[in-house]
Image (tube, rainbow, N blue to C red; front, side):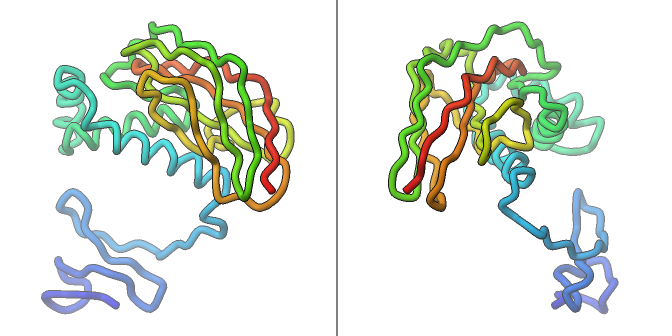
Length: 208
């Protein structure tokens, strides 16, 4: 249903029409687009994008004020907020399988910590991932977790299921809910200045 303060196609039209068109507003600009529903909202591609988007949006508030301020020039150029500039550039970097950064431009000088003794322990509709990595305090930002039904020979954003903050501790992540079966995992540390580390060896786990 289209909600309006004046006739449809007016400046304040919003909502969907006949399940075909969507009326909305972005940055103060009204637009109409086709309503698109993903065929598989839980595909690896969808999860890879949503995982990074969720991580970035939740982490913004934790970023130091000086780093947040570096986004102001890009924000002014695009007439958006520093937060939106940060989200846009870091999502573009992720699409190229480059790590996100607290500040802009991404310095890419930190060396990510090494993931050691990765373990995937299966259980009832889940697999728990742990390791004995030692994240670098203030440098390692998060764990990028990759999953597939077969052995993972190459990691990329399109087989990444989640990015979780390190909080300066070793990984302890539960992947659920899962159908019964064998799942393969790899994970890597990402730094606060845009570097993605080397992923651990392929580590299978069985959900029951």
